[in-house]
Structure formats: C-alpha cells, structure tokens
Length: 187
Image (cartoon, rainbow, N blue to C red):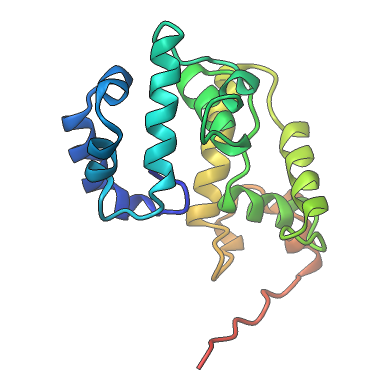
C-alpha cells in the first residue's frame, strides 16, 4: 500500500484491509474483485492485483513468505525496494533498500552531484546503500529504519536541518555548503 503513497493516506485503508483480510491466505482465497474493492480509494490498482497474485503464489508454495531479497523479487509486484524492506524489517536480513527518502540522504551525504533520476544514478545509490549496510541483519534493520527516518524528518526534500543531523560531520553536501535547488511552481 505504501508504494507511491504516504503513510498518513494509507493508515485507515490498511486497518480496514487487514480487518477484511487478516492473512495472506485470506487474500489468496478471495476473488480478485474483492481485493480490488477493498483497495478502492488508494489508486494504483495494479498494487492490489499484484498483491492478490503474490498471495496466491505464496499460498500455493506452502504459505510462507520467502525471507531472502532475491526470492522476494521473484514474486509479483515486488521490486528491489520492497524486497529489501520485507527482508530487512520482517526477517532481519542484511538487505539494502533505497526509497525516495533514503536516496536523498545517500545522495546528499555521499554523492551530491549524482542524478538520482538516471539509471546510472539509481545503480550508484543502490551500490552506496549496500556498501554502508552493517554486516548483521538486526543492525541492518536499525540502519535502514534510521536512514528512512533521517530522510523523512531531518534531510527532507524541502529543507535540510543540518544542525540536527547526526551524520553532518560525514556529509559531502554539508561540507561543501551545497544550496538546495530552487523549487519552481507551475502556474
């Protein structure tokens, strides 16, 4: 539900959805139309269809979600970020993840000139994320959560709160005093 959608918008939908479908097996056994109907209002209905297909595949394979990122990526609708997030947060595996907030933190801290909108930029961000990931799963869980929170609360898109940043001593953007890009509003 959180793909391309902020947490605040998802919370009520999430609670209603898990009340109706408390397990993946419940999702798998439901008709696709019921899953899509429960998703109504969130948009991006391909996510609901992918979740239903994923639930059916997991149920057919015995009901256990895989713990490793590569196995997760083989499931419908699961990309690198979701695979890393599930492996890290649900199974405490050592798995990198790069969402919008993490990408911003990594770019500002390590590669301010990097263009995150290009394929090369995305590959570079994932390589940075992997290179700084702690070796153990539990430490990686904490590390990933911290990077996400840092990007959401301190190193935000609209403002950098460098005086509050715990990594500013190691931040290339802070050291170089790189200004935020000007935001242009369309008329």
